[in-house]
Image 1 (spheres, rainbow, N blue to C red):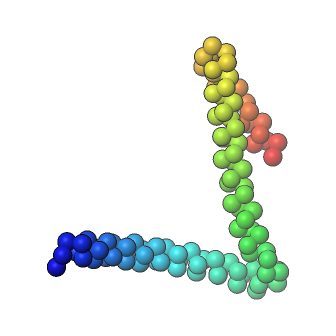
Image 2 (image 1 turned 90 degrees about the horizontal axis):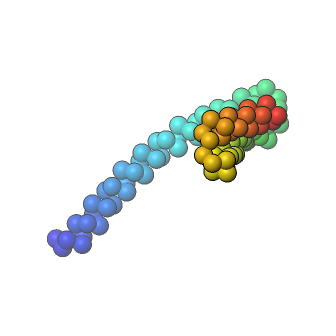
Length: 104
């Protein structure tokens, strides 16, 4: 058997293993999603409530990541603009994070 065919066979086997693993993960996620959808319908809420809840939950966690990124950028900017005063820059960065978290 030529070396190219052996390499293609090995790549195909690895790709098949990765697909099976990903399918299992997607299957469990799909079951949970369907369960939430059925629960929402049984309670009597409209069909769009299930996806809206999942989008709102993701948006909430994304908001905290955005706040941390803004606070880190402010910390770096203060650190570089004030002659590398570490305590001042970390304090201002922490203040920005706390203020953003409490405002929104």
